[in-house]
Length: 306
Image 1 (spheres, rainbow, N blue to C red):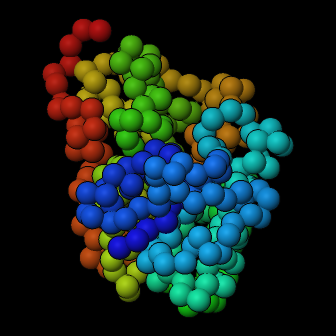
Image 2 (cartoon, rainbow, N blue to C red):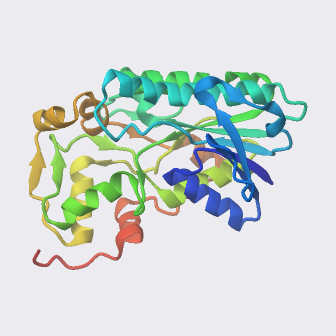
């Protein structure tokens, strides 16, 4: 299989590249610099609408994982513009370019996020649930709509709605480990808000599954079947690390520190389920939180002194 990947240098892209290479796939990376002659690379500039269609001929699959980080830095107006533009512009360019090819790829996997559902409290949502309100929900709606040209061209499109991804190499979990190891970790706000998470091994597993299963198309919640509250997550992580978790970050403090991002990412509650993945027969490697944390960090140990 010949696969073209955008966003291959990121946390997910790097893991997917390694997995595909092990399976014998020929992987080419979309880059924004002059291609290295010794590597499989294709140059593009999505912010300028620049991508040579000839460079996209001959691929069996295209995977788009690109996008400005939503979790780093305050959401200034300029930051929000970069978050939106980096997703919409790149996806539109890929979709429209693929639609013009004489032999387009059979499948286009494009990242999205469960942020599309917004803050839903205790409501259980699946892929048929309507989009919510807020900045992230709006970005995700446009992100998925930007794949329409590929769909209209008959390409099988899968919109990967990722929840928070747990990895020991980066992302949310890696940022939380230092304070929790020091014994200064704790719940945020009330701790009652739900988190629909997924382990990196299952992110890679779902992407491979979606590449291979012709029946899988459209939106796909890439989350485990077992969402947890922030308080449950905090307790589980403290247990794995053998550290107390008595401290807490009040909601007002989170808003002071992170602004709008606090309400949409730290204090919002989302209880999503992977209905379509379950129906398609995908089996999660890490369906339960403690098993995932133990697999990423190490086995559960008796609680001891700091």
